[in-house]
Length: 156
Image (cartoon, rainbow, N blue to C red; front, side, top):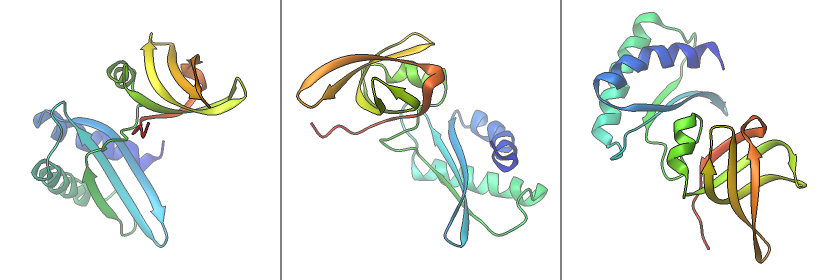
Protein backbone atom coordinates (compact mmCIF):
# COMPACT_ATOMS: atom_id res chain seq x y z
CA UNK A 1 0.00 0.00 0.00
CA UNK A 2 1.38 3.40 -0.87
CA UNK A 3 2.08 6.05 1.72
CA UNK A 4 -0.55 8.31 0.13
CA UNK A 5 -3.36 5.76 0.57
CA UNK A 6 -2.33 5.13 4.20
CA UNK A 7 -2.38 8.87 4.98
CA UNK A 8 -5.76 9.27 3.26
CA UNK A 9 -7.21 6.33 5.21
CA UNK A 10 -6.11 7.97 8.48
CA UNK A 11 -7.50 11.37 7.45
CA UNK A 12 -10.87 10.10 6.23
CA UNK A 13 -11.54 7.64 9.11
CA UNK A 14 -12.85 10.22 11.65
CA UNK A 15 -14.98 11.93 8.97
CA UNK A 16 -16.61 8.64 8.00
CA UNK A 17 -17.05 7.55 11.61
CA UNK A 18 -18.85 10.79 12.43
CA UNK A 19 -21.15 10.33 9.41
CA UNK A 20 -21.70 6.60 10.12
CA UNK A 21 -20.12 5.61 6.79
CA UNK A 22 -17.67 2.83 5.93
CA UNK A 23 -14.42 3.09 4.00
CA UNK A 24 -14.43 0.48 1.23
CA UNK A 25 -11.20 1.36 -0.57
CA UNK A 26 -8.69 4.10 -1.41
CA UNK A 27 -6.95 4.19 -4.80
CA UNK A 28 -4.17 6.51 -5.86
CA UNK A 29 -3.54 5.95 -9.57
CA UNK A 30 -2.13 7.66 -12.62
CA UNK A 31 -4.31 7.55 -15.71
CA UNK A 32 -2.74 9.18 -18.74
CA UNK A 33 -1.15 12.42 -17.55
CA UNK A 34 -3.43 12.81 -14.53
CA UNK A 35 -3.34 11.47 -10.98
CA UNK A 36 -6.57 10.39 -9.26
CA UNK A 37 -7.20 9.91 -5.57
CA UNK A 38 -10.37 7.83 -5.32
CA UNK A 39 -12.12 7.18 -2.04
CA UNK A 40 -14.94 4.62 -2.06
CA UNK A 41 -17.46 4.86 0.77
CA UNK A 42 -20.62 2.97 1.62
CA UNK A 43 -23.23 2.09 4.25
CA UNK A 44 -25.90 -0.59 4.43
CA UNK A 45 -28.55 1.62 2.83
CA UNK A 46 -26.12 3.00 0.20
CA UNK A 47 -24.60 6.47 -0.04
CA UNK A 48 -26.02 9.44 -1.90
CA UNK A 49 -24.37 12.26 -3.81
CA UNK A 50 -24.73 14.70 -0.88
CA UNK A 51 -22.80 12.38 1.45
CA UNK A 52 -20.07 11.94 -1.16
CA UNK A 53 -19.90 15.74 -1.52
CA UNK A 54 -19.58 16.33 2.24
CA UNK A 55 -16.83 13.70 2.57
CA UNK A 56 -15.03 15.14 -0.47
CA UNK A 57 -15.17 18.69 0.92
CA UNK A 58 -14.03 17.74 4.43
CA UNK A 59 -11.31 15.37 3.22
CA UNK A 60 -10.14 17.98 0.68
CA UNK A 61 -9.67 20.52 3.50
CA UNK A 62 -7.58 18.03 5.52
CA UNK A 63 -5.50 17.13 2.47
CA UNK A 64 -4.85 20.84 1.81
CA UNK A 65 -3.68 21.26 5.44
CA UNK A 66 -1.07 18.50 5.44
CA UNK A 67 -0.43 18.37 1.67
CA UNK A 68 0.76 14.73 1.37
CA UNK A 69 0.69 14.75 -2.45
CA UNK A 70 3.38 16.84 -4.16
CA UNK A 71 1.56 17.35 -7.49
CA UNK A 72 -1.91 18.06 -8.85
CA UNK A 73 -4.51 15.33 -8.61
CA UNK A 74 -8.27 14.84 -8.83
CA UNK A 75 -10.11 13.81 -5.66
CA UNK A 76 -13.13 11.58 -6.30
CA UNK A 77 -15.39 10.30 -3.53
CA UNK A 78 -18.03 7.77 -4.57
CA UNK A 79 -19.90 4.58 -3.83
CA UNK A 80 -18.19 1.36 -4.93
CA UNK A 81 -21.23 0.51 -7.07
CA UNK A 82 -22.55 -2.89 -8.07
CA UNK A 83 -19.09 -4.43 -8.40
CA UNK A 84 -17.88 -3.52 -4.93
CA UNK A 85 -14.45 -4.93 -4.03
CA UNK A 86 -14.29 -7.54 -1.28
CA UNK A 87 -11.29 -6.78 0.90
CA UNK A 88 -12.05 -7.32 4.57
CA UNK A 89 -13.35 -10.50 6.22
CA UNK A 90 -16.71 -8.86 6.90
CA UNK A 91 -17.05 -8.07 3.16
CA UNK A 92 -16.81 -11.79 2.38
CA UNK A 93 -19.30 -12.75 5.10
CA UNK A 94 -21.78 -10.17 3.72
CA UNK A 95 -21.26 -11.53 0.18
CA UNK A 96 -22.34 -15.11 1.01
CA UNK A 97 -25.22 -15.98 -1.32
CA UNK A 98 -24.21 -13.34 -3.86
CA UNK A 99 -22.55 -13.58 -7.28
CA UNK A 100 -18.81 -12.83 -7.03
CA UNK A 101 -15.69 -12.57 -9.22
CA UNK A 102 -12.45 -13.94 -7.73
CA UNK A 103 -8.90 -13.89 -9.14
CA UNK A 104 -6.22 -16.05 -7.55
CA UNK A 105 -2.44 -15.71 -7.36
CA UNK A 106 -1.98 -19.25 -8.68
CA UNK A 107 -4.18 -21.69 -10.59
CA UNK A 108 -6.74 -23.86 -8.80
CA UNK A 109 -7.91 -26.76 -10.98
CA UNK A 110 -6.09 -25.04 -13.86
CA UNK A 111 -7.96 -21.73 -13.52
CA UNK A 112 -7.12 -18.35 -11.97
CA UNK A 113 -10.44 -16.53 -12.51
CA UNK A 114 -13.73 -17.70 -11.02
CA UNK A 115 -17.26 -16.29 -11.20
CA UNK A 116 -20.17 -17.77 -9.36
CA UNK A 117 -22.22 -17.75 -6.20
CA UNK A 118 -20.30 -17.53 -2.92
CA UNK A 119 -21.83 -20.42 -0.98
CA UNK A 120 -19.81 -20.10 2.21
CA UNK A 121 -16.95 -18.25 3.87
CA UNK A 122 -15.44 -19.58 7.09
CA UNK A 123 -12.72 -16.97 7.58
CA UNK A 124 -10.09 -19.09 5.81
CA UNK A 125 -11.70 -20.45 2.64
CA UNK A 126 -14.29 -19.43 0.08
CA UNK A 127 -16.67 -22.08 -1.21
CA UNK A 128 -18.15 -21.11 -4.57
CA UNK A 129 -20.50 -22.65 -7.08
CA UNK A 130 -19.07 -21.89 -10.51
CA UNK A 131 -20.40 -22.78 -13.93
CA UNK A 132 -17.96 -24.48 -16.27
CA UNK A 133 -19.48 -24.65 -19.75
CA UNK A 134 -22.87 -26.25 -19.00
CA UNK A 135 -22.27 -27.85 -15.61
CA UNK A 136 -22.07 -26.42 -12.11
CA UNK A 137 -19.15 -27.26 -9.86
CA UNK A 138 -18.27 -26.42 -6.26
CA UNK A 139 -14.78 -25.09 -5.71
CA UNK A 140 -12.91 -24.20 -2.52
CA UNK A 141 -10.41 -21.33 -2.60
CA UNK A 142 -8.05 -20.67 0.33
CA UNK A 143 -8.01 -16.96 1.29
CA UNK A 144 -4.21 -16.75 0.97
CA UNK A 145 -4.58 -17.55 -2.74
CA UNK A 146 -7.11 -14.74 -3.39
CA UNK A 147 -5.47 -11.89 -5.31
CA UNK A 148 -8.67 -9.85 -5.87
CA UNK A 149 -12.34 -10.35 -5.23
CA UNK A 150 -15.45 -8.28 -5.90
CA UNK A 151 -19.17 -8.55 -6.23
CA UNK A 152 -20.13 -9.20 -9.84
CA UNK A 153 -23.15 -8.68 -12.03
CA UNK A 154 -24.56 -11.93 -13.38
CA UNK A 155 -26.00 -11.95 -16.91
CA UNK A 156 -27.28 -15.53 -16.79
